[in-house]
Amino acid sequence: MSGGSAASRRYSRRIWPTMLSYVVLLALALWTRHSRAVEGALRYAIALLPAIPLVGVVALVAQAISAEEDEFQRSVWAEAMLWGTATTMVATTVWGFLESLAGAPHLPLYWVFPFFTGATLVAILTLRQRYR
Amino acid sequence: MKNRLKVLRAERNWSQADLAERLHVSRQSVNAIETGKFDPSLPLALRIARLFGHPVEAIFDDDTNPEK
Image 1 (cartoon, one colour):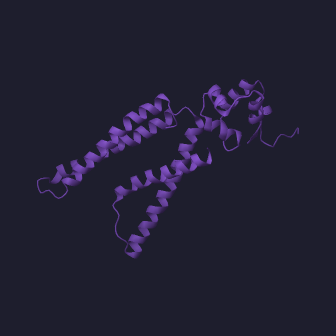
Image 2 (image 1 turned 60 degrees about the horizontal axis):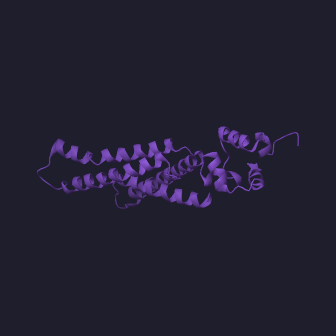
Image 3 (image 1 turned 90 degrees about the vertical axis):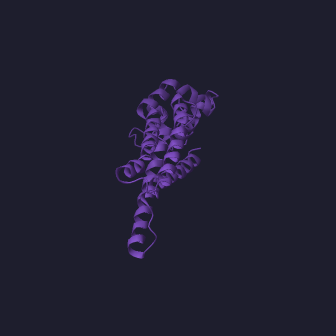
């Protein structure tokens, strides 16, 4: 997170394999989507596979923030996540209005998390500029 | 919150990084506190006070001190 602390090194070491396994499991789930060999409960199980590393990513970020000893850096992360949450809430709700009332194309809900991640990262970069 | 951190630091010829190292915080923290953009927690404020050998209220000023 903020620099060279043991917590941030542990985070960096674990986050990439977790992200990679998310991509691999998601690719697998998408690949079997139209297969007739995969039916019923197995289809549910495969659809849930990408959720495992996803929960892992959330847990790693939570761990890294609580292990961050610098109270100012922790407050920057908290503020960035509030901005990310607010942006995501507004954007997804507005899109819901557009879908239901104006016939905009349907967006699958799994885009909510990447959107939140992107919005939080933009907020982090903006806040770092402000507090440089 | 207004504070005298920059003056106290200059008196000792410390850079922001020097002070950060002595307080075990990031340089960004020192900058944010100095410029009044971030108020330190009570434990960190006490650490700052101890480091400079002044009471907390001699370093930080919240503009509500009735004695002034």
